[in-house]
Length: 117
Image (cartoon, rainbow, N blue to C red; front, side, top):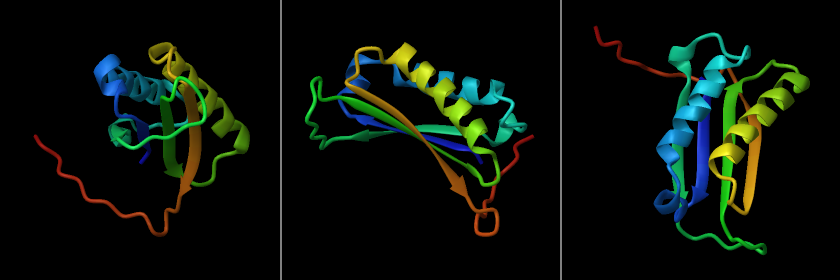
């Protein structure tokens, strides 16, 4: 926790540096006062091959941020706006950019990690 999952038009991987965007999103989340444990932040990108949109250009990037429930709406709005700005910096020519904050439930979230020394 948190997980930042960027779904995007598959062709963006050919025209944009999505690794740099993923790193910038990680850095923005780490710099945010919302998250206190940088080691827990995870970012990833998922290419979507079959995209149909009614707008041009027919490209998109949508970031879903999964984090534990309990934060005020205003905190989520501020975080979403900051992450959208990062996306806009890296993807200024993409047709649609969006961010959605989703709550994870602490009672049902489980994980396992390996700590290398």
